[in-house]
Length: 136
Image 1 (tube, rainbow, N blue to C red):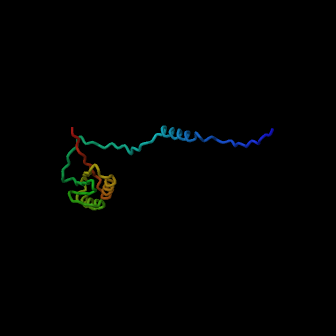
Image 2: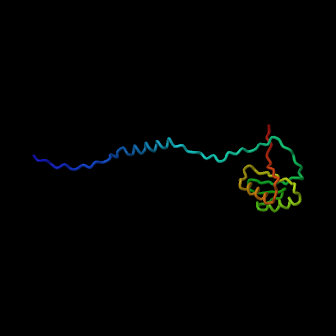
Image 3: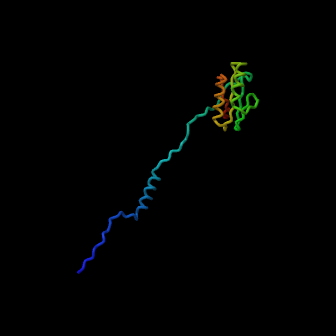
């Protein structure tokens, strides 16, 4: 009787179910992961219910529309950097003048910040933000 040599079988890891395990891990992490939604800053905008009317000779109106056009007392200026030079001249005439800002609600906030910076350079410290009166 002759015996044949047995071939050495190498031990290995069965990979037949590896794709199933990977799929289950991916599915598990997808189901248990919580995505945070960035909500930004919580800002409570003021509502105007009542107020007092100011005399028109004591007020300088600055209007800003959505196309970033700036108007100071119905004179249209395109450059925000001219606000400080115009307002410093007006402040020299009457130091108790009030600046009323009427800004469209869809105007970008960086323009509003630039206008406030220009007003502080011109020493215009009495600033009013005009709002629409709530009805009802």
